[in-house]
Length: 451
Image 1 (tube, helix red, strand yellow):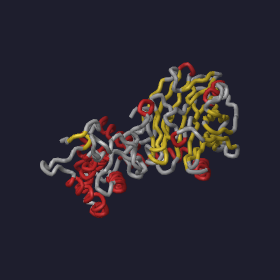
Image 2 (cartoon, rainbow, N blue to C red):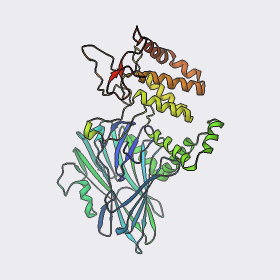
Image 3 (spheres, one colour):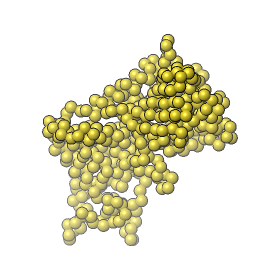
């Protein structure tokens, strides 16, 4: 997964690449409906009459997380501009709200005006046809929408007297606009044209102006509210205005710290953890947090959520393979996270066929995903399955029962998942040898009988 710092909440997932460009925005499912289709949304800086994108060569970048949270800790430094930016990104643990805090550190002696530019290259629902965007003066915000997918972008800063909410500059235009009107190029002179609406294939850019005292710092905020309609995204924007964006960042950090330090693990588990070096314990907790970003709240454990592979293969790994999901679920069971594993087993219960086998892979919403396994092979109609994808789900569910003795949960899945899958595996065998019949191997390249 070549994405350096994902942040998410099980419904809204945002991925950044190594140059701190927002590259993937998934909603309402982790791994399904990438509303940027991998196209970068960028951060630019204008100061002292100079403009610079933070993904450029003039900047050094350190991409990390705050300890034990899914809040990023990104340091951006440009020595030529005497400027350092500290960025902290979160997706609220409960709401479909992405928040970025930007602390600008002025390393020059004199007070300076800083203009931060945020660009949006949306491809709503995975393509740019039929998109629309507009600036709305009452809320001083920009909206992108198509059908039941709405995105509201806004900025703010804390003044001595109160919160100041609303963008200072904006522009909205078509992606194929002339160079001087292209939103991301329009920002290079420190000014945006103020074009108010566009439809079809559209980009936008917005700006936040900060005054930074000499040898001091100033803080600005940027957020994206996500929902199905105007009412939902403006409700989130009102909540940010009322409570302040720091409220959502802090509560999300606190929630993840509680999540990653669960108290229901066994004493033996905690004893083994205490024996590990400090760096290994940190890596273990960080792995759990990043793993959680790739799991949808409806149970799908996706293989990966980056979009780069689409350039060569015209498809992604943002699918739920039952085999991969079962192995991850087993690890989470051992780590003491049964509730995530239960949602995965619920997912498998919903999608298993009446005959008792699980197919190649599934979309995060439970629909059948694209597959290269054929229903026709050498003149016959074989099942396009990998037998281990069904078997490993039962194996992981057995581990869950061994760990937690959750009889009520198993009872609800007994006939529909356990018996159905076990009967199919028992029958899917050669009558003479008793071996399983051929299926596709773990790497999906050959059909055969595999140990």
